[in-house]
Amino acid sequence: MIACLLVLLAALGDAPAAALDDTAVVPYLPWVEVVRAPAQPASLFCTPAGGGSSFAAADAFGGGDVDAGLEIILYSDQPPWGTPIAHFPAQDIWLEASDGTLVACHEGTVADANTDTDGRTGWALPLRVGGALDRGTGARLLVVVNGDSGWGQDELLLGVNSADLDGDGQVNLTDAGLFSQDLFGAYAYRSDFVWDGVINISDAGRMSQALGQRCP
Ligand SMILES: [Ca+2]
Ligand SMILES: [Ca+2]
Image (cartoon, rainbow, N blue to C red; front, side, top):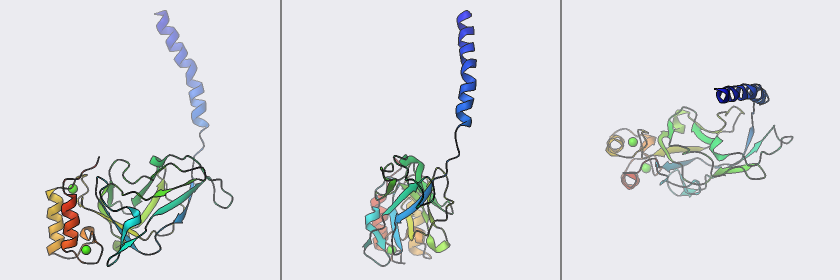
């Protein structure tokens, strides 16, 4: 009983210190500068397993690859007065669609690495996502840091689509059915995996290669 009381008293003794630590946390709002982004519109084909295109080999419209790699610098304030934030965790820096139509696997759109000593990080590796970000609908790709994207970002000229059309984390017959609707019906960017404004055999090739892939 005495031991229990001592434990209880020790716990109570710790409480004020913990509360003090909590109040010492200042709301943290980093500022992001995009220092490298595609100069022309590009489309990134993805799968939930990361089997899609790397940013370096995104599709230019109508054929050919374009380097759509993204690089950012994270600042603690607005540049040029801000201090770069080194070693900021990659899992707190991610990409998302402004209209919520991209469905990421766990950490499927986070930056490739923590920020380096200069506050830099970026995206080159394939994303692991389902759904689609169709720039034709007005949706935009956003860089999000700690859940915040409100620093007035320039438009990223990057659309994203995925063989996981319904965004449930796997590529299966349901997705193949949705793809065939687009193959034989009205044009839909979500299925234009080889980005040329037409859904045809080349898109079907990417669809069939992705069948069976799922979020890790
Ligand atoms: Ca699916
Ligand atoms: Ca196509």
